[in-house]
Amino acid sequence: MPSVTFGNTTFNQEQHILASEEGIRRRPALTVDENQVQLGVSGNKIVRPGSILYKDGNNNGRLNVRTKTGAAVTAAFTTFIDIAPFTGQYDSEMVQFLDDGDVLQVLRPYSFITLADTWDADDTAALVIDGQSVTYTPGSADLNTAASNLAVAINADFYHSKLVEAVTEGSIVYIFSRSRRTYSLAVTATTTGDGTATANDATLVGGVEVGTIDAGGVNVSLGTVTLAAAAAVSLPSGAPIGVSGWVPYSVVKDSFNLAEGETDISGLLAALIYGERLPYWDEDIASELP
Image (cartoon, rainbow, N blue to C red; front, top):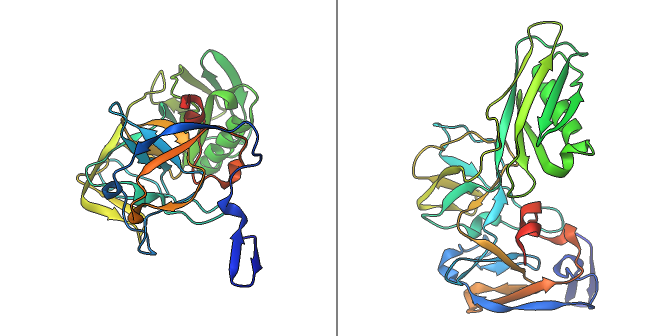
């Protein structure tokens, strides 16, 4: 963590997200219920610069209610969901902003493609997303490696990478929209053996619920939440999940401690910022901010 120390004062570069003081526009403050934020491992409720402030239909505020899974989730089995911490410039436990009773949802429309049976290194998969067809060569007879190669190729493709993000788990390639838009999906495998590639849905599906956080289900020290029942769907590590019903409102500029009574939170509507210093950012946030 880069820092400069003068005597007993330490200046942490990561605490400052602004790249320029020019062009700053702010939004009116929203009131955040500090009881919906759990105590961190330090015993405080620290909100980092770059946190996202969300609002509901009643103009109530909440912080950082969108995140990603830190481990794979198995439908009808997983009850403990690992919430990925942000570790780019400083550690930030995203799980502490979740609360009992929160309904977790896959934030963006998605589906998945399953590779099966026997593949050769020269076999291909023609993937059609929103009518745009691209043929990929996964380049391996090992299904897990082929799936991983396919995801890398999708994320690097000029056309498909603008629409979707691919994430793998074993021999399954999950396809997540990069926005709240849904797209048509089809795949055709051309193999020398009996290898197959099967899309689970003809279109990416939105609004999919994962489960409800149980009473006392947020564990900040472990970075997990416990669901009231087993997860409704399977997901890979890195899947975008969060609390339904909250819309991005602004980006928080300064650090503060909710436990000290600072609950009226304003934020930035327009500014030039260092993206790598944000606790969490995704294309859907960018598309939904005013």
